[in-house]
Length: 403
Image (cartoon, rainbow, N blue to C red; front, side, top):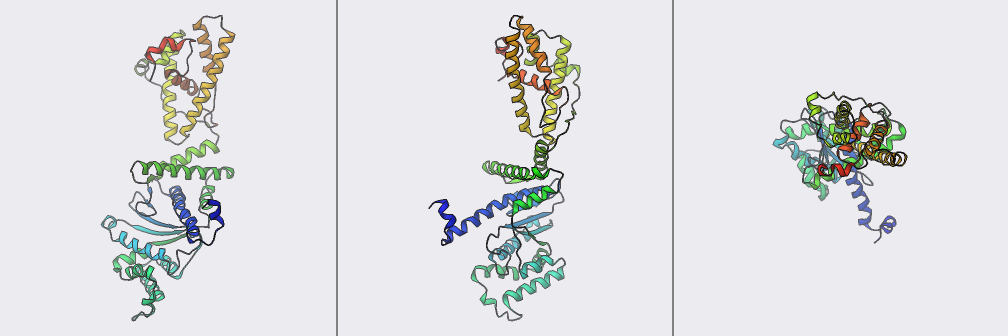
């Protein structure tokens, strides 16, 4: 059977079920991404751990979310198996000692607008009395009027065990469950709903689709890595927020990067004199005072790179891009210097190349960096011997080459 053939074959039950099943699984990642976008600071969100998707905030409040794609059927219908099985599972969670001291929100998320008398009455019930009335109404809908419940035996076998469990549950468990139940309905397109949330943020309309695709992909890849390493699929909202803001700044904002790096002490500076990037400067006979200035640039740039990435001001991949730009620029400048000044001593050629590179400027994610940053990044590359100033720097430093 080909995939294209499956698209047009409406006779096979298996073929019509598979798209819905695949959509349901894919929906969980989109729903998790949306949840992380809206979650409060300090909270954690998970996939297939406490429920399909779940959230726990700093106060200990837990939200258990059952996500339903509703491609064709109505998972919130009065006699839907998914509805009653969900409530049956939630009863187990509500009665678990692990949740005894926590406030639990039970959310049924459906990707499109659906409804049912039972689920709608449960959703409206916010007090214990409202919940009792809603539960009795549900019992009447499925079993008929009390006390004989003439329709009880007509409940479909596939849902009867779950219905029985809910109606027979202790009030101290089922009533709070109904009070804390909420029905959340999507527009029919979870990705469009995610985009609508991002669109309410201060980002360019033209960037919204790209941002959402990046976030969904980032969440999926991160979850895959966690599961591959045997760890639970849990993502901190604060980590997600860092991914989000750094990517938005990468593609959607133009600004100036501010350095928080402090100038190093003389003792710290002297400790770097044996480093490769300083030995490179000694080869071209750069004055000692300028070597100390190079150490200052190197240390401050190193701090900035880490600080900006941790704060989400830049995406880490931008630093790799910058290194590529600096290395390509060095290659061309080195070639030009060799052609124009081949008659000069090697030290003089190196000093000219060094001076030329120290005046080079490049943006970081279209943002201007402080004056020490590009020189400092060049010194980081020089320390790794990726670039050098003396024409024969590799030969002179090969015994100290960084591995």
